[in-house]
Image 1 (cartoon, chains in turn blue, cyan):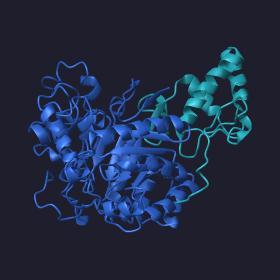
Image 2 (cartoon, rainbow over the protein chains, first blue to last red):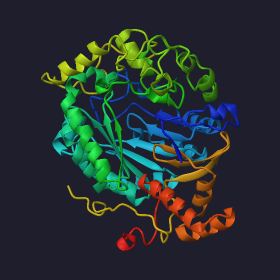
Image 3 (cartoon, each protein chain N blue to C red):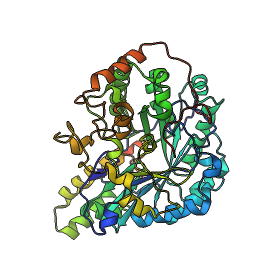
Length: 386
Length: 113
């Protein structure tokens, strides 16, 4: 049986041309509000304010349009999506649109009643983040007290309601020593899946890179531990790993290819090919308030700009891997080379690769500076944004 | 930290006696836009082929894997033992990916060999 994940493609028997080209998944950042302040947050450093957020009706319309377009899965994310008091109403529209629903949450503000209500509406999957399995370290990383104990409760409610449970563990220099314990923690919680998600260095994480970058040795140790755990816990828990590309030979197939499998809607309704795309400052993004979702996906400038392989330069253009990794990440190429059409420096074929890999080597062996916590106004010079 | 009840989970082993079903959070439906069947699961979309669809539609938690194999052997005019082996392999793969309930007796230790 073929498995389609965001990093794999499959032959699709096309019937409706626009549906056949539809993304598999839609990531909805319902809000950028969050009680946690994790220094690796994937939100842009220029956080969107509450008064710019889409209304309930607008989000519900996004869900209906997504279902019609042929999108299969919706990820209700944030910020902290449960900060929206109308999460239930948005979820209800997603369920009615036939979407497979996933709540990506830190869990700390959830109650049992609300979890049961979400399950009753039809929530399929809860993806619960942890910052560490040592409570003190988890508190320090998230700048939030007592989070871990609350997350354990939330995990048990998700199980009780019969929903799928994933533990999402962002990994970095300050918790990488606990990878095996995180996997055991996820098993004890009853999770069917854990993401050992090495932090990707964009936005807040780029700002905090020198506090977060693990050494190559500790990364290799963690990777080996994951391999061993996969064998040991086969059939008990699925372990997915996101690799830090500073230590990879080839770049990651970012988003499974630009504008190929996934789209992202920001709190204010801007539609992006990936959650970091606004860091490419010359791109213009359409808003669901102005243009139908299908039209944006199929014809929007930002989506067409790097879709497929036509835009590629050398060494990507003639590379046999160009349909495998799509030249890596456009945002990283832009941030580090000034041109988003260049090869991602994560690729060993990039002329900038050596210089770039050295950054990780140097930073991971230096004393880590204090975190710049994720909060509104923490960063004066903003990256991207409208 | 003690959570308890899930700590001693065991791998599900599929045998002819299992009565498999899809968990609440796994959904099989026809994807009209792409003209195919899909199995929706956490962060995964599976493309079951025609035989897999036929098997999964019979996974109702009541019929055993052997029953399903017999019925398909009849339907496709194929040897039941061969079909049983194929089905067990397929369902084991899905169970290992966390998208199948095995039903009694496989979830206790009785079916372990």
